[in-house]
Length: 270
Image 1 (cartoon, rainbow, N blue to C red):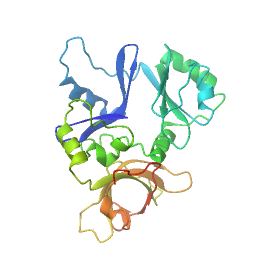
Image 2 (cartoon, rainbow, N blue to C red):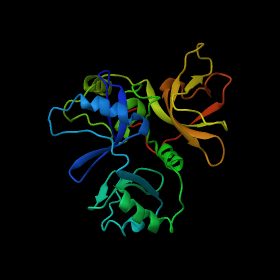
Image 3 (cartoon, rainbow, N blue to C red):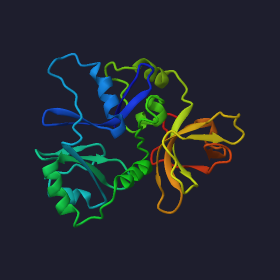
Image 4 (tube, rainbow, N blue to C red):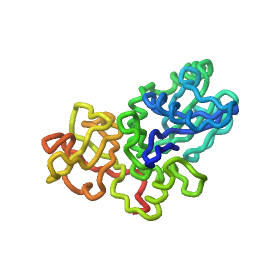
């Protein structure tokens, strides 16, 4: 995963970046496409560089399960299985994505997507995008949207723990603040996986409150939420580290209870 920040070091968006047919592509939340294009236009210094929305031209699919490499081998001869690795040919790109099970994000033209769909849909269960987002939550991969854009420095959403930040590359907008937090600062907020005891879906941007918190003072913000197959909702949220062992509630002390769950990776820097 990658991201870009504003001058205050707060992430405007995060995304997957890959190359295809001599172009660079960003796979990003739909409601951040226009904002991202507007922001990146400010940094075009060469006349032959253009940024445009190609959502209708490049189809985005996901494949999950232990048989994924074997199923994809029919379309791409050599399938890499290392997390974040890319497998590709002239027709398809498959990116290995972190998670509790083997899975790939696939990018291709509409024509080739139809071919892949016709063959694979006979061998796998077809699910919608919310199920894929649920797997991202279980993997601790936070995707911010328009409700949380500009709120968090990368470390607050664990970007440096999921290979999303480099502290050795060249300059980028907000780098001074991001680097200072890494080398000199003390991080007070982190992204956690949580479970919310409610049957009504919470929204990205909703607030979490700790027991005995001062009136109106929240301790966290939801990033993404999806229905748990058993009950309630699982979510990723940025929470004050000091409050993670307190009783937490959604949208106020009388709201649904919130339980902090384990992520599949550790906070090594902590």
